[in-house]
Length: 359
Image (cartoon, rainbow, N blue to C red; front, side, top):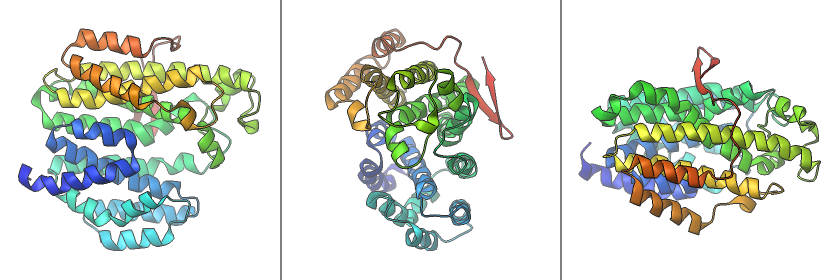
């Protein structure tokens, strides 16, 4: 697809992204045009899959059927308009108007998808397939009681975010021969990158998720701190809750260190890709610092990164994007005060449905 033909599609995606993601609306436009189109398209497709997964009114069989239909449409084996109509008909009022509108726009999103390169389409389909197959494993088993242990949290984060890290690696490597030369090292860090961002979201959104009947915290970690997740509530035993929270922040910090290593493997000349990664990492670090400074928060709004802080991240990284030394200094500054995990953060990989941690 030529640059001239990309403009209407880029304009559409730039218009819809702020409605469904504040962070990605900021970072995706920093990418080179071919990557901006592919990554934006991938995000919207993943968001459609996630919208289906999150609607509480959909029973398990219907949810599975809609996910299978989405995968079929991606493989050109179904009708996007029919899928969108059927999906919107079943979504409840619990799904926001903006998410419902995105689902209704599935034919437009799929039309953009069909204009991508074969390699880009294959990478996106693989990612969406893994998400649709993996998310139900965790959404509907004791969803309000937390996950059993840290290994389950790793696996959950892989299926909802680690696969996106792998997708980005595929798209970046297809974009640049210089990045392709770093493929294995990038791949080894990609799931950990995704997990750092996802764990930050889990920490930030813990009380909103709890209000919706979800909990992604590891039971064993909080039990070791003397906190029973069956009693999870904003006003219950916050002193012990903070102990478990501190450990989660430390682990997320470790994964974000891997995310920074990932970013520095991108050639300095690829400033747009570096900024895309750096802004996500910087905002995650600042969010973790806000949580640690306000451990009695009861809403994501209590720990929201200010516009001024976002602007500072943008400006600082623009000025230092080509210098690995300056970027390492910025990371240390942004992460100052965050606890360190006492062991090397594992690089998460999943093979045949089982997770492996390699150090």
